Image 1 (tube, helix red, strand yellow):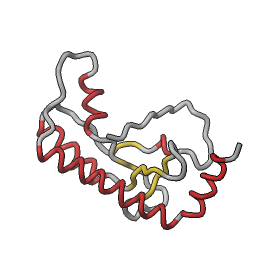
Image 2 (cartoon, one colour):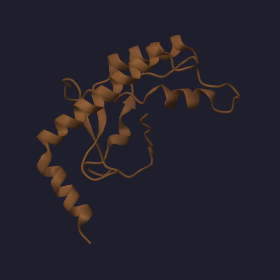
Image 3 (cartoon, helix red, strand yellow):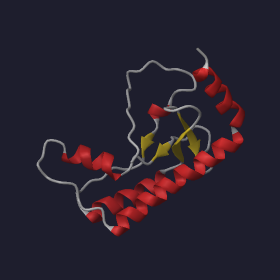
Image 4 (cartoon, one colour):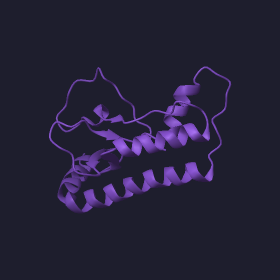
Length: 137
């Protein structure tokens, strides 16, 4: 699962604005149907993914389809993020992760893998520069 820590009070820092990217949907009910509806809606809205880039723990946000200038960026946080929020303060347990839900989660992971591979090729020199900065004393 991917968890994002979003701090809207954080001062703007050029190049470090991934915390501004929202999920295009939320899980509205703690059921298999609710989770599958979430993945369908999130997949439709999603136009980027957060991928490992350079030294850990850095992430890059890469587009997964063409994005027009001025369009909002959306990613998929994953159902566990939303279920934990939905169920906070209750004794209810998360819905079972059925085969259909696991297939949706696998699709999200494949988008991250594709984005990671693309960033590794397209931005190899930038990743090397970041690694050198982290490795320097």
